[in-house]
Image 1: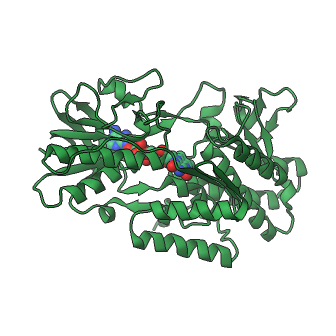
Image 2 (image 1 turned 120 degrees about the vertical axis):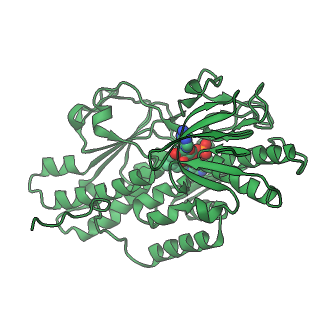
Amino acid sequence: MQVDVLIVGGGFGGAFAARELDKLLSRRDIDVLLVSPENFLLFSPLLPEAASGTLEPRHAVVPLREMLTSTSLMIGEVTDIDVGARTATVVSVNGDRETIRFREAVLSPGAVPSVFAIPGLHDHAVGFKTLADAIWLRNRVVRQLDAADAEPDPGRRRELLTFTFVGGGYAGVEALAELESFARDAVKAHPRLAIHDCRWVLVEATNSLLPGLDPRLARFTESSLRRRGVEVRLGTRLVSCVDGVVNLSDDGVLPYRSETIVWTAGQTPSPVAARWNLESDDRGFVPVDDRMAIPGIEGIYAVGDFAAVPEPDGGLAPSTAQHALRQARVAAKNIAQRYGVGDGARYRYRTRGLAVTLGKWQGTAQVRRFTFTGPLAWWMGRSYHLLMIPGLGRKLRVVADWTMALLFRRDIAQLGQLGTPSRLPEP
Ligand SMILES: Cc1cc2nc3c(=O)[nH]c(=O)nc-3n(C[C@H](O)[C@H](O)[C@H](O)COP(=O)(O)OP(=O)(O)OC[C@H]3O[C@@H](n4cnc5c(N)ncnc54)[C@H](O)[C@@H]3O)c2cc1C
């Protein structure tokens, strides 16, 4: 297959690059192909709310076919790229292997969880990055509450209801806060349980939660979680979790059994750079210039969590969705310029604000040098995410979910069997 522009990855970087090219090149006869393993863009800022059931999980994604007009979509994975020869190998959803020839490319394969050789981690911990992770975690909390409700032994009940999150960045803090808020409501439907039967532990290796945010907000987040009974363990590392027994580097905490361990301790760029013979820095990011171009390789761009993007004031852009989608637009404009459309663009974006939701009515936000906490910050975070979601229909679905969640009690059905159809009985 021959295309003009190949886009790798249907996350924030890839999907928004394709969307911008749709707009810029709509009147031209230019073939743009997006290759993505999923047929949707996962709107990860909404993942914690999908996990807590405030939002219907399907509404935390945007179908790529709905979002794009003239870009073609191929569901599959790019297994190899030769940027010199301008060829890519794609294994499609059917398992077919196809060679794609292209002229320009936008590489946006994102990041993967960074893991370490911690005994028991691989067998007992789960990540928090995909929609499946969010759905699993919600069902897990409901299942643990049901199991604890039927458990007469208080010690065993405590083990069932102990949830440990390792990593106090945005993903870990938001996921824990949303699920704790969910459990707080769900526990009311279990007559034999009380909220203090649940133990929530947040382990962070540095001395502050939410690195990168204004320290005042980090402190507010910490005290808000502590007030809710969450054990926040700063300056502490997970040493092991063999058989679900959590051992922390803090000698003051005795090893304890936690049936649910969530690993949210950072991300590392997708490891494909080495396989694709792309130069990367010591942390695995592919360096680009302020036009998102990989230096020395004409017409090849990298964006998002995969790329080391220079910020206008020095340093590198953080790995966030708000940066990835703007980098994508810059890459698209520079590609369009190669086809005689527009003047191209340079990356000038500076972080304007950050928002962290901490469950129902609770949040922290920072807009330039102003900080906000509580219900106002919670509302600001939601409004900002709503603005980012592409398409009016999607926005309305999310608003409807949020409204329902405020008006009615949480849905505590455990739908863990979804995705596993029942077998017909033997004749
Ligand atoms: C739980 C969570 C909450 C977050 N909250 C926020 C937030 O509130 N605000 C914010 O700004 N950011 C947030 N982020 C960060 C944000 O999601 C990322 O910075 C953003 O998704 C980066 O975009 P990307 O395109 O680089 O990667 P992604 O969005 O991860 O997309 C990469 C895509 O590439 C695909 N891919 C990988 N390899 C290949 C291949 N070989 N071939 C084809 N496709 C491939 C992947 O399947 C994926 O779909 C959050 C992240 C998480 C995990």
